[in-house]
Image (cartoon, rainbow, N blue to C red):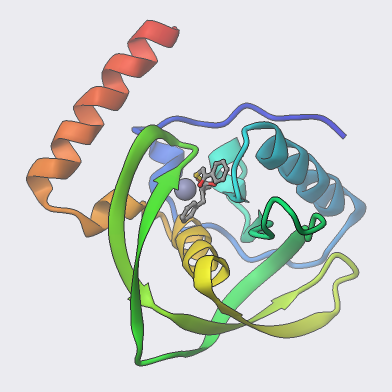
Length: 170
Ligand code: K1U
Ligand code: ZN
């Protein structure tokens, strides 16, 4: 297992629609393990493959609390099969847009179908931070960032900040 470099916005790879995973191969499992290590190291509660430059439909997350044990999840080819009418506004962050936190409103609960690490079909319902995070990560697989929910003015100010951050880090 190893950590991978996290891409910072703006980057063309973060705007692409990712390809479905045709089979959960050892290479795909190894990518998922690396993504979990990268997420815990950051630290974060989620990470999608395009954030490490891989344009495949897989994300990892662990929204368990500090006092609970780790609960790593890996979702290949995730799809929303049901979303609640009830919505929830949650402050979101993104490891590809460091130090920016903004409120986003999304369905409060969602059910997702996906393939697990063994390639077996699963369906799970998420609520609270798990639901927010799962939708944020699924958006990444469709080339959508949480700042796309903000006004054009706010988005452009954040993008300018990130361009400056990238110049400083280069
Ligand atoms: O996709 C990502 O970039 C990860 C992102 C996920 C997320 C967080 C909050 C709401 C929606 C989606 C993060 O993990 S940002 C970092 C973060 O939230 C965090 C960092 C340290 C401890 C706990 C949370
Ligand atoms: Zn993100």
